[in-house]
Amino acid sequence: MALNPADLFDVRSMLSEEERMIQDSVARFVDEKVIPIIGDCFDQGRFPKELIPEIAAMGLLGSSLPEKYGCAGLNGVSYGLICQELERGDSGIRSFVSVQSSLCMYPIYAYGTEEQRMQYLPGMARGEILGCFGLTEPQGGSDPANMKTNAKRDGDDWVINGAKMWITNGNVAHIAIVWAQTEDGIQGFIVPTTTLGFSAQEIHKKMSLRASVTSALFFDNVRVSDAQRLPNVKGLKGPLGCLTQARYGITWGPIGAAISSYTTALEYSKSRILFNKPIASTQAVQLKLADMARRITLAQLLVLQLGRLKDAGNMQPAQVSMAKWNNCRMALDISREARDILGGAGITTEYSPIRHALNLESVITYEGTETVHQLVIGREVTGINAF
Ligand SMILES: Cc1cc2nc3c(=O)[nH]c(=O)nc-3n(C[C@H](O)[C@H](O)[C@H](O)COP(=O)(O)OP(=O)(O)OC[C@H]3O[C@@H](n4cnc5c(N)ncnc54)[C@H](O)[C@@H]3O)c2cc1C
Image (cartoon, rainbow, N blue to C red; front, top):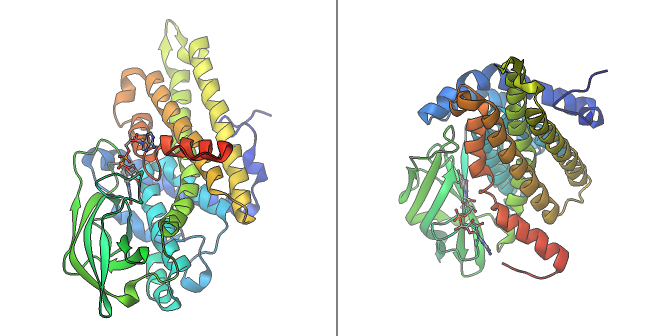
């Protein structure tokens, strides 16, 4: 029996029936609703907000959180498969779901009070309340301990001042999860974006993640009550705990972008006739395609084991770093190589590889740059911090 070129080791056979069903339903949504419009959205620099109700109705927002809060209560492998299929469509759509789920709903669930969970999570799962996550600041995202945004206690309130940079969903969000220095260390606040003194400015001229909203946030004496503070975490472990969740999803997502690029190049190479034969029959192109298949297969096996570790409660941040580094690099290299196989046709958004390649420049940078994740692994194996 012929092997599936996009799943040479039949990783799908290691999924449960429920996991396969979830993957198939998200794949159908991406094929029918995302792929037909996403090239134009990218060209126009437009985030397709109109897809949010269906994404929510499918249970893709906060999918791993309990049903009690209106969420689907799925396991980690299912969340990974959702990210993979969404990113086969576009990294921007996956970024929207990652931010809403792992960076906004997760901290409310993990660090918030029961009142905060009930107030926000069901509406967020329905896609009626959108969130953004403000950690990175203009002076450097790789060193979040050097945070300048601060929150000062004033009676029952807190007054927040500072700025955040490169914030996904910033201009569409109803609430921002904001991390700020306090006398007691870094703390998180749920800030409604209608609060006086809060402003969001969309970042234009992006050549990457053009179908996603990215913003700068400004806080000018933004006053929130103590009931808006996330009380159950203090210090950098708060935002870093969210990032581990989001990065986990990002280990899966780029596999989708890589599969889209690789299958596009594979099909194209079979029908592109040069020197009287399809370019797929040349050794040079076959070497490239074989190498793509090899790297996709390794990535698929890596994330499935990572997901099983997560679901057993044994996933370590350094393992997430290795998978994020490997899979972003794999997908970026493959999408660039696929673009090359398409020749001139590869430079327009008629075909997916260049869009994925441009998007992956962000994906390999955000949530810890490639270098940062390499240094995490270096620290893990040597025991020496080289940051
Ligand atoms: C499209 C997009 C969306 C984003 N969304 C969000 C969001 O929703 N919320 C949020 O908080 N942030 C978000 N970010 C920010 C992102 O996480 C940061 O861009 C990232 O952490 C890198 O920070 P920086 O851009 O300030 O680069 P810097 O930290 O200034 O890094 C510059 C360079 O220095 C390198 N470097 C860093 N440390 C070392 C070292 N010790 N040794 C050697 N080299 C080093 C880096 O690898 C990089 O090459 C987003 C970014 C983008 C591009």
